Image 1 (tube, helix red, strand yellow):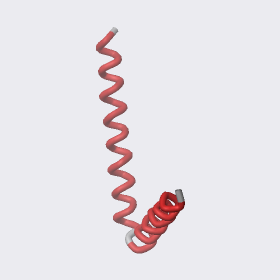
Image 2 (cartoon, rainbow, N blue to C red):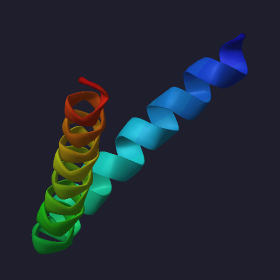
Image 3 (cartoon, one colour):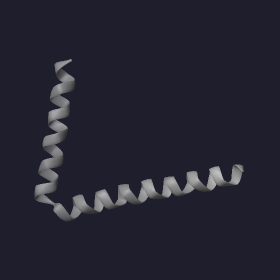
Amino acid sequence: MPAKKYLTWAAVAFVAFYVFNQPEGAARSVQTAADGLASAADSLTTFVTSLG
């Protein structure tokens, strides 16, 4: 169980390091993820609408 805790802290440290050293890259990553989620939601809406 401690290994999971260490990996979580390492991931948090990596994200913080990335955000502080390359804020533009981090912002692009977040924007890309948000665009992907919006696209998935759009596709799901289209699918559910076509069922009715």
